[in-house]
Length: 109
Image (cartoon, rainbow, N blue to C red):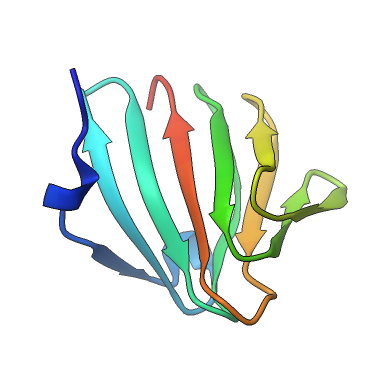
């Protein structure tokens, strides 16, 4: 099975999970697992939230930003994969000057 993101339209999600600006995504789901191609413009963020019943992996493709994770902060850039285990909290923030582009997987959504 393939997910052809070139055929999926971008969806705008303003203030996603209480974040700033707009989070854009293309979502593929099989009803259990979710895979997303995501984009945050400079100054935008996904709000701080806790993963209960699932986890999330975010692989950065373009741009730079930071992740707030539990009590810490991690820089992210192309080639970095942030992992938020079940029961933990995080937020993704584009504090760079270009779009922050990534793929995210949420198994057992």
